[in-house]
Amino acid sequence: MNPLQSTRVALRALRVNKLRSILTMLGIIIGVGAVIAMVGVGSGAQARVAEQIQSLGSNLIIVLSGSTNTSGIRLGQGSRLSITEEDALAIAREIPAVQATAPSMRGNAQVVYGNLNWATGIQGVTPDYSEVREWAVIAGRFVTSEDLAGATKVALLGQTTAENLFGDTDPLGQVVRIKKVPFTVIGLLDRKGQNSWGQDQDDIVLIPLSTAKKKVLGVSQANARSVGSISVKIRPGEDMAEAEAQMRELLRQRHRLQPYQEDDFTLRNLSEILPTQEESSKVMTYLLAAIASVSLLVGGIGIMNIMLVSVTERTREIGLRMAVGARGRDILMQFLVEAVTLSLIGGVIGIALGLGGSQAISRFAEWRTQVPPQSVAMAFGFAACVGVFFGFYPARKAARLDPIEALRYE
Picture (cartoon, rainbow, N blue to C red):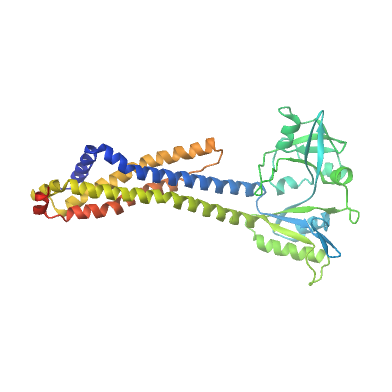
Protein backbone atom coordinates (compact mmCIF):
# COMPACT_ATOMS: atom_id res chain seq x y z
CA MET A 1 0.00 0.00 0.00
CA ASN A 2 1.55 3.33 -1.06
CA PRO A 3 1.41 6.52 1.08
CA LEU A 4 -1.46 7.97 -0.98
CA GLN A 5 -3.64 4.92 -0.37
CA SER A 6 -2.75 5.00 3.33
CA THR A 7 -3.82 8.64 3.45
CA ARG A 8 -7.17 7.86 1.79
CA VAL A 9 -7.86 5.02 4.22
CA ALA A 10 -6.94 7.23 7.18
CA LEU A 11 -9.19 10.09 6.03
CA ARG A 12 -12.06 7.66 5.45
CA ALA A 13 -11.65 6.35 9.00
CA LEU A 14 -11.76 9.90 10.40
CA ARG A 15 -14.93 10.71 8.47
CA VAL A 16 -16.65 7.65 9.90
CA ASN A 17 -16.20 9.01 13.46
CA LYS A 18 -16.71 12.72 12.87
CA LEU A 19 -17.75 13.69 16.40
CA ARG A 20 -14.85 11.83 17.98
CA SER A 21 -12.44 13.40 15.50
CA ILE A 22 -13.75 16.91 16.28
CA LEU A 23 -13.47 16.36 20.04
CA THR A 24 -9.95 15.00 19.58
CA MET A 25 -8.91 18.09 17.60
CA LEU A 26 -10.36 20.41 20.24
CA GLY A 27 -7.24 20.26 22.41
CA ILE A 28 -5.00 21.15 19.45
CA ILE A 29 -7.36 23.94 18.36
CA ILE A 30 -7.36 25.53 21.80
CA GLY A 31 -3.62 25.03 22.21
CA VAL A 32 -2.60 26.58 18.87
CA GLY A 33 -5.10 29.41 19.26
CA ALA A 34 -3.87 30.19 22.78
CA VAL A 35 -0.21 30.16 21.70
CA ILE A 36 -0.83 32.59 18.81
CA ALA A 37 -3.00 34.92 20.89
CA MET A 38 -0.51 35.03 23.78
CA VAL A 39 2.47 35.54 21.50
CA GLY A 40 0.50 38.33 19.82
CA VAL A 41 -0.06 40.03 23.18
CA GLY A 42 3.61 39.71 24.13
CA SER A 43 4.89 40.89 20.76
CA GLY A 44 2.51 43.84 20.83
CA ALA A 45 3.85 44.86 24.24
CA GLN A 46 7.42 44.53 22.97
CA ALA A 47 6.67 46.69 19.92
CA ARG A 48 5.01 49.29 22.13
CA VAL A 49 8.08 49.49 24.36
CA ALA A 50 10.32 49.93 21.31
CA GLU A 51 8.10 52.75 20.04
CA GLN A 52 8.18 54.49 23.40
CA ILE A 53 11.97 54.39 23.53
CA GLN A 54 12.19 55.49 19.89
CA SER A 55 9.90 58.44 20.62
CA LEU A 56 12.49 59.79 23.04
CA GLY A 57 14.94 60.13 20.17
CA SER A 58 17.44 57.63 18.78
CA ASN A 59 21.10 57.62 19.84
CA LEU A 60 20.32 60.05 22.63
CA ILE A 61 22.33 60.90 25.76
CA ILE A 62 20.83 63.28 28.32
CA VAL A 63 23.06 65.44 30.53
CA LEU A 64 21.26 66.49 33.74
CA SER A 65 22.25 68.99 36.38
CA GLY A 66 23.57 67.75 39.69
CA SER A 67 22.26 68.05 43.23
CA THR A 68 22.88 70.51 46.03
CA ASN A 69 24.57 69.21 49.18
CA THR A 70 24.30 71.58 52.13
CA SER A 71 25.33 70.46 55.62
CA GLY A 72 24.80 66.84 54.62
CA ILE A 73 21.34 67.53 53.14
CA ARG A 74 21.08 66.48 49.49
CA LEU A 75 18.18 68.18 47.72
CA GLY A 76 18.03 65.83 44.76
CA GLN A 77 18.92 65.81 41.09
CA GLY A 78 18.49 69.11 39.26
CA SER A 79 18.46 71.22 42.43
CA ARG A 80 21.80 72.70 41.37
CA LEU A 81 22.05 74.06 37.83
CA SER A 82 25.61 72.94 37.19
CA ILE A 83 25.55 72.67 33.37
CA THR A 84 25.46 75.57 30.96
CA GLU A 85 24.82 76.49 27.35
CA GLU A 86 28.61 76.69 26.91
CA ASP A 87 28.85 73.03 27.98
CA ALA A 88 26.45 72.15 25.17
CA LEU A 89 28.54 74.08 22.65
CA ALA A 90 31.75 72.43 23.89
CA ILE A 91 30.27 68.94 23.62
CA ALA A 92 29.17 69.57 20.03
CA ARG A 93 32.52 71.13 19.13
CA GLU A 94 35.02 68.79 20.82
CA ILE A 95 33.45 65.31 20.60
CA PRO A 96 33.47 64.01 16.99
CA ALA A 97 30.73 61.43 17.63
CA VAL A 98 28.20 64.12 18.54
CA GLN A 99 25.82 65.21 15.79
CA ALA A 100 23.98 67.97 17.65
CA THR A 101 23.24 69.23 21.16
CA ALA A 102 20.18 71.02 22.56
CA PRO A 103 20.27 72.71 25.98
CA SER A 104 16.88 73.24 27.60
CA MET A 105 15.07 74.29 30.77
CA ARG A 106 11.79 72.93 32.03
CA GLY A 107 9.13 74.14 34.42
CA ASN A 108 5.38 74.11 34.90
CA ALA A 109 2.79 76.82 34.45
CA GLN A 110 -0.86 77.51 33.77
CA VAL A 111 -1.49 78.28 30.10
CA VAL A 112 -4.58 80.42 29.41
CA TYR A 113 -6.53 80.87 26.17
CA GLY A 114 -9.75 82.89 26.37
CA ASN A 115 -11.78 81.40 29.20
CA LEU A 116 -9.92 78.06 29.07
CA ASN A 117 -6.75 77.14 30.93
CA TRP A 118 -4.49 74.10 31.22
CA ALA A 119 -1.60 73.26 33.58
CA THR A 120 1.27 71.87 31.53
CA GLY A 121 5.03 71.65 31.18
CA ILE A 122 6.92 74.64 29.78
CA GLN A 123 10.19 73.82 28.01
CA GLY A 124 12.68 76.41 26.89
CA VAL A 125 14.52 75.04 23.83
CA THR A 126 16.92 75.94 21.03
CA PRO A 127 16.46 75.40 17.26
CA ASP A 128 18.47 72.14 17.44
CA TYR A 129 15.94 70.58 19.83
CA SER A 130 13.75 69.40 16.94
CA GLU A 131 16.66 67.53 15.30
CA VAL A 132 18.05 66.07 18.51
CA ARG A 133 14.71 64.77 19.78
CA GLU A 134 13.42 63.94 16.28
CA TRP A 135 10.24 65.88 16.94
CA ALA A 136 8.53 67.07 13.77
CA VAL A 137 6.25 70.10 13.41
CA ILE A 138 3.03 69.17 11.58
CA ALA A 139 1.79 72.76 11.27
CA GLY A 140 3.63 76.06 11.41
CA ARG A 141 7.33 76.24 12.19
CA PHE A 142 9.87 75.55 14.93
CA VAL A 143 11.89 77.98 17.02
CA THR A 144 14.59 79.77 14.99
CA SER A 145 17.92 81.38 15.89
CA GLU A 146 16.23 84.79 15.46
CA ASP A 147 13.64 83.83 18.08
CA LEU A 148 16.45 82.76 20.39
CA ALA A 149 18.49 85.93 19.88
CA GLY A 150 15.50 88.24 20.30
CA ALA A 151 13.80 86.29 23.11
CA THR A 152 10.57 86.47 21.12
CA LYS A 153 7.29 85.48 22.73
CA VAL A 154 6.39 82.53 20.49
CA ALA A 155 5.28 79.03 21.43
CA LEU A 156 4.74 75.55 19.98
CA LEU A 157 2.03 73.34 21.45
CA GLY A 158 2.05 69.59 22.01
CA GLN A 159 -1.01 67.66 20.87
CA THR A 160 -2.46 67.17 24.36
CA THR A 161 -2.08 70.85 25.26
CA ALA A 162 -3.57 71.97 21.95
CA GLU A 163 -6.60 69.67 22.34
CA ASN A 164 -7.34 70.92 25.85
CA LEU A 165 -7.00 74.59 24.97
CA PHE A 166 -8.33 74.74 21.41
CA GLY A 167 -10.26 71.53 20.74
CA ASP A 168 -10.86 71.37 16.99
CA THR A 169 -9.88 75.01 16.44
CA ASP A 170 -6.66 75.77 14.58
CA PRO A 171 -4.21 77.12 17.22
CA LEU A 172 -1.77 78.73 14.74
CA GLY A 173 -1.62 82.49 15.16
CA GLN A 174 -3.65 82.46 18.37
CA VAL A 175 -2.36 84.14 21.53
CA VAL A 176 -2.03 82.22 24.81
CA ARG A 177 -0.86 83.53 28.16
CA ILE A 178 1.86 81.84 30.20
CA LYS A 179 2.26 83.44 33.64
CA LYS A 180 0.36 86.47 32.27
CA VAL A 181 2.85 86.85 29.40
CA PRO A 182 1.24 86.70 25.92
CA PHE A 183 2.72 84.18 23.47
CA THR A 184 1.81 83.69 19.81
CA VAL A 185 1.37 80.06 18.76
CA ILE A 186 3.68 79.45 15.77
CA GLY A 187 3.59 75.67 15.53
CA LEU A 188 1.89 72.40 16.39
CA LEU A 189 4.11 69.46 17.32
CA ASP A 190 3.63 65.94 15.99
CA ARG A 191 2.22 63.39 18.43
CA LYS A 192 4.87 61.60 20.51
CA GLY A 193 2.76 59.54 22.91
CA GLN A 194 3.87 58.30 26.30
CA ASN A 195 7.48 57.66 27.17
CA SER A 196 8.76 54.47 28.82
CA TRP A 197 7.78 55.65 32.32
CA GLY A 198 4.24 56.65 31.37
CA GLN A 199 4.66 60.42 31.01
CA ASP A 200 2.62 62.11 28.28
CA GLN A 201 5.22 63.78 26.06
CA ASP A 202 2.52 65.71 24.17
CA ASP A 203 1.46 67.64 27.29
CA ILE A 204 4.04 70.38 26.66
CA VAL A 205 4.61 73.92 25.42
CA LEU A 206 7.95 74.75 23.77
CA ILE A 207 9.25 78.31 23.82
CA PRO A 208 12.68 79.80 23.02
CA LEU A 209 15.25 79.12 25.75
CA SER A 210 16.13 82.80 26.11
CA THR A 211 12.45 83.70 26.49
CA ALA A 212 11.96 80.99 29.12
CA LYS A 213 14.81 82.38 31.19
CA LYS A 214 13.91 86.05 30.92
CA LYS A 215 10.10 86.00 31.05
CA VAL A 216 8.74 82.68 32.33
CA LEU A 217 11.03 80.34 34.29
CA GLY A 218 13.69 82.76 35.49
CA VAL A 219 17.47 82.41 35.59
CA SER A 220 19.93 81.14 38.15
CA GLN A 221 21.45 83.92 40.25
CA ALA A 222 24.79 82.10 40.20
CA ASN A 223 24.99 81.70 36.41
CA ALA A 224 22.51 83.15 33.92
CA ARG A 225 23.77 80.72 31.23
CA SER A 226 22.93 77.59 33.23
CA VAL A 227 20.35 75.09 31.97
CA GLY A 228 18.47 72.13 33.39
CA SER A 229 19.53 69.55 30.82
CA ILE A 230 21.36 69.02 27.56
CA SER A 231 20.07 66.54 24.97
CA VAL A 232 22.95 65.10 22.93
CA LYS A 233 22.39 63.22 19.66
CA ILE A 234 25.14 60.79 18.66
CA ARG A 235 25.88 60.14 14.99
CA PRO A 236 24.55 56.81 13.62
CA GLY A 237 27.08 53.98 13.91
CA GLU A 238 29.14 55.65 16.64
CA ASP A 239 29.90 53.91 19.94
CA MET A 240 27.46 55.32 22.49
CA ALA A 241 29.50 54.12 25.49
CA GLU A 242 32.68 55.74 24.16
CA ALA A 243 30.86 58.99 23.44
CA GLU A 244 29.42 58.96 26.96
CA ALA A 245 32.90 58.45 28.46
CA GLN A 246 34.31 61.35 26.41
CA MET A 247 31.44 63.61 27.49
CA ARG A 248 32.02 62.75 31.14
CA GLU A 249 35.72 63.51 30.86
CA LEU A 250 35.10 66.80 29.03
CA LEU A 251 32.50 68.01 31.54
CA ARG A 252 34.71 67.14 34.51
CA GLN A 253 37.50 69.18 32.95
CA ARG A 254 35.22 72.14 32.24
CA HIS A 255 33.81 72.04 35.77
CA ARG A 256 37.31 71.76 37.27
CA LEU A 257 36.50 68.65 39.27
CA GLN A 258 39.32 66.89 41.10
CA PRO A 259 39.75 63.09 40.78
CA TYR A 260 38.38 62.56 44.28
CA GLN A 261 35.27 64.68 43.61
CA GLU A 262 31.98 63.25 42.41
CA ASP A 263 30.37 64.37 39.15
CA ASP A 264 28.18 67.45 39.53
CA PHE A 265 26.08 66.22 36.62
CA THR A 266 24.35 63.01 35.53
CA LEU A 267 24.54 61.25 32.17
CA ARG A 268 21.67 59.07 30.96
CA ASN A 269 22.31 56.88 27.94
CA LEU A 270 18.81 56.16 26.60
CA SER A 271 20.12 53.46 24.24
CA GLU A 272 20.74 51.31 27.32
CA ILE A 273 17.06 51.42 28.29
CA LEU A 274 15.81 49.73 25.10
CA PRO A 275 17.65 46.36 25.49
CA THR A 276 16.49 46.11 29.11
CA GLN A 277 12.87 46.86 28.24
CA GLU A 278 12.96 44.54 25.23
CA GLU A 279 14.43 41.74 27.33
CA SER A 280 11.63 42.12 29.87
CA SER A 281 9.03 42.01 27.09
CA LYS A 282 10.65 38.91 25.56
CA VAL A 283 10.56 37.13 28.91
CA MET A 284 6.84 37.93 29.21
CA THR A 285 6.23 36.71 25.63
CA TYR A 286 8.06 33.44 26.27
CA LEU A 287 6.22 32.94 29.56
CA LEU A 288 2.82 33.46 27.95
CA ALA A 289 3.74 31.13 25.08
CA ALA A 290 4.97 28.45 27.52
CA ILE A 291 1.75 28.62 29.50
CA ALA A 292 -0.33 28.37 26.34
CA SER A 293 1.81 25.46 25.09
CA VAL A 294 0.51 23.35 27.96
CA SER A 295 -2.77 23.22 26.03
CA LEU A 296 -0.93 21.70 23.07
CA LEU A 297 0.57 19.05 25.35
CA VAL A 298 -2.88 18.22 26.72
CA GLY A 299 -4.22 18.08 23.15
CA GLY A 300 -1.45 15.69 22.15
CA ILE A 301 -2.25 13.38 25.05
CA GLY A 302 -5.89 13.45 23.95
CA ILE A 303 -4.86 12.38 20.44
CA MET A 304 -2.83 9.50 21.82
CA ASN A 305 -5.71 8.30 24.01
CA ILE A 306 -8.22 8.41 21.15
CA MET A 307 -5.81 6.65 18.80
CA LEU A 308 -5.24 3.88 21.35
CA VAL A 309 -9.01 3.45 21.65
CA SER A 310 -9.24 3.41 17.85
CA VAL A 311 -6.59 0.67 17.64
CA THR A 312 -8.53 -1.42 20.15
CA GLU A 313 -11.85 -0.94 18.31
CA ARG A 314 -10.36 -1.79 14.91
CA THR A 315 -8.25 -4.77 15.95
CA ARG A 316 -10.21 -7.18 13.74
CA GLU A 317 -9.95 -4.75 10.82
CA ILE A 318 -6.19 -4.56 11.30
CA GLY A 319 -5.96 -8.35 11.41
CA LEU A 320 -8.00 -8.62 8.20
CA ARG A 321 -5.76 -6.11 6.39
CA MET A 322 -2.67 -8.02 7.45
CA ALA A 323 -4.23 -11.29 6.34
CA VAL A 324 -4.75 -9.98 2.80
CA GLY A 325 -1.17 -8.70 2.50
CA ALA A 326 -0.86 -5.41 4.38
CA ARG A 327 2.53 -5.04 6.02
CA GLY A 328 3.29 -3.60 9.42
CA ARG A 329 4.61 -0.36 7.94
CA ASP A 330 1.31 0.07 6.01
CA ILE A 331 -0.64 -0.15 9.25
CA LEU A 332 1.87 2.18 10.92
CA MET A 333 1.49 4.70 8.09
CA GLN A 334 -2.30 4.57 8.24
CA PHE A 335 -2.60 5.34 11.95
CA LEU A 336 0.22 7.89 11.85
CA VAL A 337 -1.52 9.74 9.01
CA GLU A 338 -4.73 9.79 11.05
CA ALA A 339 -2.94 11.35 14.03
CA VAL A 340 -1.08 13.92 11.94
CA THR A 341 -4.23 14.82 10.00
CA LEU A 342 -6.10 15.47 13.23
CA SER A 343 -3.25 17.71 14.41
CA LEU A 344 -2.93 19.64 11.15
CA ILE A 345 -6.65 20.29 10.76
CA GLY A 346 -6.78 21.34 14.41
CA GLY A 347 -3.73 23.54 13.80
CA VAL A 348 -5.36 25.36 10.88
CA ILE A 349 -8.55 26.01 12.87
CA GLY A 350 -6.43 27.02 15.87
CA ILE A 351 -4.50 29.55 13.76
CA ALA A 352 -7.75 31.17 12.64
CA LEU A 353 -8.99 31.18 16.24
CA GLY A 354 -5.72 32.68 17.50
CA LEU A 355 -5.70 35.46 14.91
CA GLY A 356 -9.33 36.25 15.67
CA GLY A 357 -8.60 36.20 19.40
CA SER A 358 -5.71 38.64 18.93
CA GLN A 359 -7.97 41.03 17.06
CA ALA A 360 -10.63 40.71 19.76
CA ILE A 361 -8.10 41.45 22.52
CA SER A 362 -6.84 44.47 20.59
CA ARG A 363 -10.35 45.81 20.01
CA PHE A 364 -12.15 45.15 23.28
CA ALA A 365 -9.29 45.24 25.80
CA GLU A 366 -7.54 48.11 23.95
CA TRP A 367 -4.29 46.17 24.25
CA ARG A 368 -2.03 46.30 21.24
CA THR A 369 -1.34 42.89 19.68
CA GLN A 370 1.08 41.94 16.94
CA VAL A 371 1.25 38.39 15.55
CA PRO A 372 4.60 37.68 13.85
CA PRO A 373 4.33 35.33 10.82
CA GLN A 374 7.01 33.09 12.32
CA SER A 375 4.84 32.47 15.38
CA VAL A 376 2.03 31.20 13.11
CA ALA A 377 4.46 28.91 11.28
CA MET A 378 5.91 27.75 14.60
CA ALA A 379 2.48 26.93 16.05
CA PHE A 380 1.47 25.02 12.90
CA GLY A 381 4.74 23.08 12.83
CA PHE A 382 4.45 22.30 16.52
CA ALA A 383 0.94 20.95 15.96
CA ALA A 384 2.30 18.60 13.28
CA CYS A 385 5.06 17.46 15.63
CA VAL A 386 2.48 16.78 18.34
CA GLY A 387 0.58 14.55 15.91
CA VAL A 388 3.70 12.59 14.98
CA PHE A 389 4.97 12.30 18.56
CA PHE A 390 1.73 11.28 20.24
CA GLY A 391 0.45 9.27 17.29
CA PHE A 392 3.55 7.15 16.86
CA TYR A 393 2.98 4.88 19.87
CA PRO A 394 -0.61 3.89 18.95
CA ALA A 395 0.44 3.43 15.31
CA ARG A 396 3.41 1.29 16.34
CA LYS A 397 1.17 -0.78 18.60
CA ALA A 398 -1.25 -1.37 15.72
CA ALA A 399 1.59 -2.32 13.36
CA ARG A 400 2.93 -4.94 15.80
CA LEU A 401 -0.38 -6.81 16.24
CA ASP A 402 -0.30 -10.49 15.42
CA PRO A 403 -2.70 -11.10 12.48
CA ILE A 404 -4.04 -14.39 13.94
CA GLU A 405 -4.67 -12.89 17.37
CA ALA A 406 -6.19 -9.81 15.80
CA LEU A 407 -8.68 -11.86 13.77
CA ARG A 408 -9.70 -13.75 16.92
CA TYR A 409 -10.21 -10.53 18.89
CA GLU A 410 -13.79 -9.98 20.07
